Image 1 (spheres, rainbow, N blue to C red):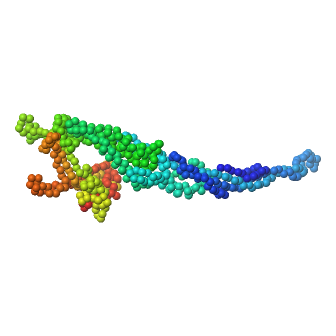
Image 2: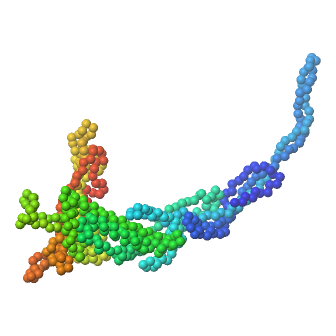
Image 3: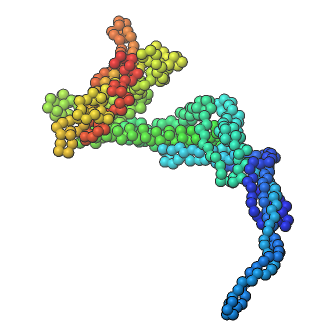
Length: 552
């Protein structure tokens, strides 16, 4: 900024200054190049603006002039006595006068207005296995420019160009002239904005492909050690712990290769916004695989041990010991024995054991394993057993069908139907209306108008397993020339016209296991106006898609 006062030689006093008003001229004279790093400048313009204003200066000077003055002199009065009298005389007087001069001041400003990026791509992703967080910021190369990227397919990564274009067109450009005119503008005056940028539609598929790639690599690289078997670990809980250690060690040995960060990151920066997203998804996924391996297998070990302790009480250690002694019988080569091993014995009516020399004496190990299809029952999706996939439900009329775009087979079904009825949601007989429902329980106490508030829920459940298999690993009714015997398997699945292998006659159908029951639960809470129950906006009866199709 340069201010040039108007020429005011001889006029030394500043009398009055006008306002600058609107600039007389304002022109863009240049641009500011984009910075390579963030925080930094994305765009800038250089302007020159000129203002003028009136400035009144004043010159003061002294003027001499003849003037009449009075003064006191000694005199005598009419009786001759001394007195004081006033006489008039002429003298020289002085006065200050002034002249004003109006000049024009000029102000010349060179103004730089920039569009600055404070940050890009701030992430905070929890890694459950490592116990750390992926916390990064401002580490994408030229994030505000779209780029051509080549992953599974070629794509144009728009990066944060959308945010840049939006801010420039909606905020920066419309306000550029007012910012140039703002004579109080400085580096602390800015209009910050935060923008949620829509990710390109292809990014989710590319991230999923990266996860699938890692999954295939792990399946190819990681195989359970043959040393982890029934012979070495007759207690399934110990086998689960050993499995977790073995798999974890093998995945960790290849963790950097699975993450493959160098494909997306070099020189301290990710090559694009999508590259950072995919790279950090890979890093998170490998960590989550490690976490789930330890969580599931160690959790299963704890559950198995807990079940043994719970079911066998003081005999739990005997059960584990029996497993170890029975480990000499090698199990089926095709089945990993994760079932619960139990000791089966012939006992008398009173529960006492026969002596080993009694003809009725009998005992053996029983190791049972359970498998089912699907692995778990979902209530909000369809399951297609032919494709082994879950399919989203699509509303049609008063019911739901499997999404036709997924080409569901004729075997597609809903595995689980649920209905939840909040009995005292809004129909209870209350002395005082309760916000969340519930039934007041009388009589009153000395300090309240009722004792407690209760509510109950009626829960109806109906489900079906497409296939349910029970393995008997210890039963020796199926001899095997190498392994001694094979596991016997009992299977329930939809099969029509089961024939007798000897006669060929139809003996019946194999139907899947279905189950249905109604149960309930209730709660008591202290008295109060809030009550207790489901939120009323959710309705007093909640039906899953299966329940709706059932017509409940």
